[in-house]
Image (tube, rainbow, N blue to C red; front, side, top):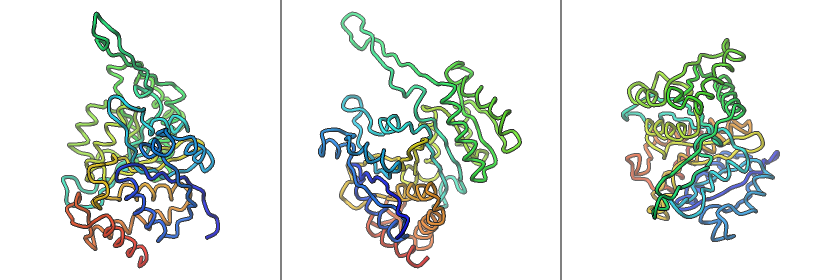
Length: 343
């Protein structure tokens, strides 16, 4: 196929290789234009190069500016720092895009179609933390510093407004905690209101909401929202809440986008307890691959993939165990590839 697009492929840890293979099968059936450069990260990176984020992987993404990534293992508490966070920092991937759409109807919530846009580089996740020793307790006091900049706020807010307008959305909700964190999230709310008046007032609706009220409203009436944009910590929490409205993280794709690179991923964990058993649901990564196709101006292929996933689940009724079915990863993939071939 002409016009091949170089892209980095990171299989990841745990179930990562299984869901990556399933996704590649679907992309091959579509005739997707990617030319893959396979690299390692996470535990696989440590085994291959002694580093959870090897230099070869960074060099590959720097060259391709595009990556599809399976889940990476990150130890809780001690151990090495998150490779996901390092990737965001290395390539200044300031925008985390998390769509959530009902695919399997009949759950607690139907007809959900939301997008969470999360700032990825600032806030309380910058990692400026330390302990203060008192007497013989070295961890007597824990401290963290959060930083939000005007420039960082403008970057993510512009991304959210422009994405919402380009995709035909009707409203952007600014989520904050400016009633308590008056400086740290006040700057976010203030910048949003200024930008809206300057540039977006005639183009799309906007509202502001305090984060705790937003969480309650998402459970009581999620249909009142369209696009939510917020700071790093709040976005991390709310994007998982929104994923829960559509069946969980197995249905939740994600994209990390910056000016010079974009990395697409399944946002769930590596699930080492089921690795190698053929139980993994590959849909989140497949939906991330559809977002990746949209990103490279092949929305036609992205839409075909989303349509095939819908039909495999709801017409053919082929579903993995987490969705109430009995299909293995391979069985679901074969059914999906058949749908693509006949679509």
